[in-house]
Image (cartoon, rainbow, N blue to C red):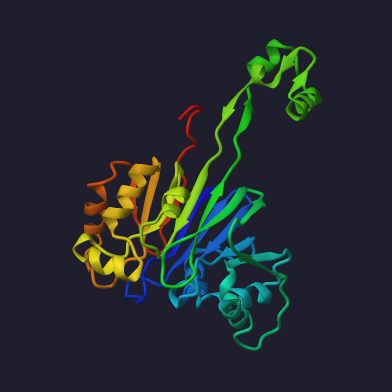
Length: 301
């Protein structure tokens, strides 16, 4: 299963209908929680998403709407006796904030929480692929994340049968790339890896485009509308139109808009503005929504 579970979509101020940020990415066995804002533990309960499958948590920056839910999540991980380590990635320059949130209150600390500070050149291999991070443009140290699955090959049963390859020999061919005179390419087709990018609080910068380049799903903030573009630039945020333009320029397959300012009661306006720039699938995120990762692209696309 590959899907995004949206836990919260508000920016600095939550509303009656939008909780603070929170995004759970299910990517087969790798489950990653991004930016748990205040109230994330309860939103996970409402979404039917337990903490036990969590493998890692990614914090873009230490503003409250992106991180104040971390203490509750960590304490719940202990309470539920999660049996495996859970890694938390966060801006390395914010170590003091992580330390405070890690032990914000007294509780029975029974979890193996692995600090994973992020800095220049950050990259880590996960069961889902390579997780990387790049610095964004915001008043405090902020990083965007990208998950990239490696390309692979899909075995074609008819071609294997034509060459008389079966049983354990198939595994050997996959491992070595050749079995006698038969190469892996002769009995398989290309299987392009999928990718996901998570871009929160930032003004336009090179890293936004690098993170979004060719991804299957881009989750990106669209705090403001174009009428407030000057304010957005001053405080390090994007408009819905800018998010759409990034998706178009980068060849994104599916665009997910989120992190909406409470000053706009009509969310349809975000869709209308982004649609002027991007004609692909656009999702205006709502709390507790589930957004499937698009189908895998065909080879060569």
